[in-house]
Length: 124
Image (cartoon, rainbow, N blue to C red; front, side):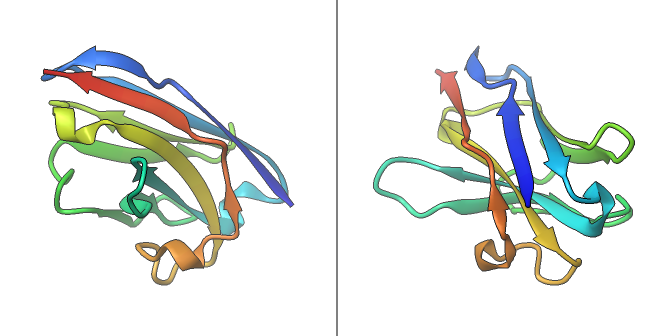
């Protein structure tokens, strides 16, 4: 069992930055690929970014590549999402998730554990 708790969401103006954190507890953190997804009401939860268990491989949605950076600190059992140059279309509830292994980390169905989400609102 892995418990995930996100923090760092909030309201920011377009062009600004936020850093989301996701603290994990439970089984060995480094065994899990970690991902960030986002969702708006009435829409599917979409992939944002992912990082492999050791941190050596990262993956990004085209819409955030070059603006967002995912990283992890296995000693602290925490994954981060640094979001720069934010746009109003980045507004969503952001979820972190944990997946065993490293394959297909872009796929929502790969993830076994999910946090409760944190709201990010970008004003124009």
